[in-house]
Length: 340
Image (cartoon, rainbow, N blue to C red; front, top):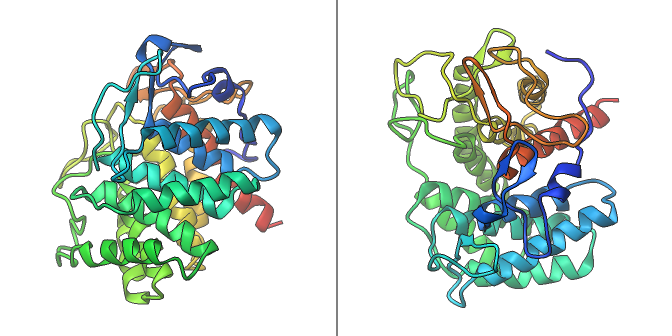
């Protein structure tokens, strides 16, 4: 595992962002405007911008761009569009898919963590609009629950947030009793750790220790499964099922950053050292402690590479990957400061 954890660098994210939003895709280090923007990314932009300590004016500008984008993405019903082209035209209809859940996650984080008053107030209005509806998707509801937990941390009596997180807690499936595969899905797919993180967050918000312990148990199992020796070996883009062993490729940065998010959440409710170790392992994955020993980011710009392959690295620096680097290093830096 690498030694010092780098500071997050926002230069690439700023380069990828114009007045409308952050371009989704890149060819190497150059934005590809023709592919437009997406709500999934803009919600994550809002998350990292609002939880950055002592944010610069440029980082605050990112939060403002993201907040306006998410507001435009919302329908009056609370459902959410996901894809906008470079001319500013929406390409899809509002839904309660993952983009809706991530939108709520971003808005809730802005409510709870932004240092800018108008961002907090505007985000709360948008959160309340989005929280009118529910999704049948477990991942969408997990992201929404994370947003509700952030709102409740700042406004403990907020009714819409409490209703949302209570509805999520009720929907969490009971343990399946299988110690070899306790995961609530037949296969691991993408951003898997968010399912465990949301259970932990809901348990903490509702002061239900049995619930957060279920989340900790699931996360511990996932962390063990995605660890090989002294480094992470995450679930590949094709997923992973019972009996499948690694290493397997392509490995995606979002899986690593989701583990870091969840381990940071777990560390807030459980003093076990493994959670902070998990965050550090996630950060080290980007700096070269991975299955092929490849550096997965550009230290000068903060750009994240799109995938770790068996024969090298996908050097495209898309927004999702760049946000994964920033997010993971934010958690690792926070741990480093707390332990000094």
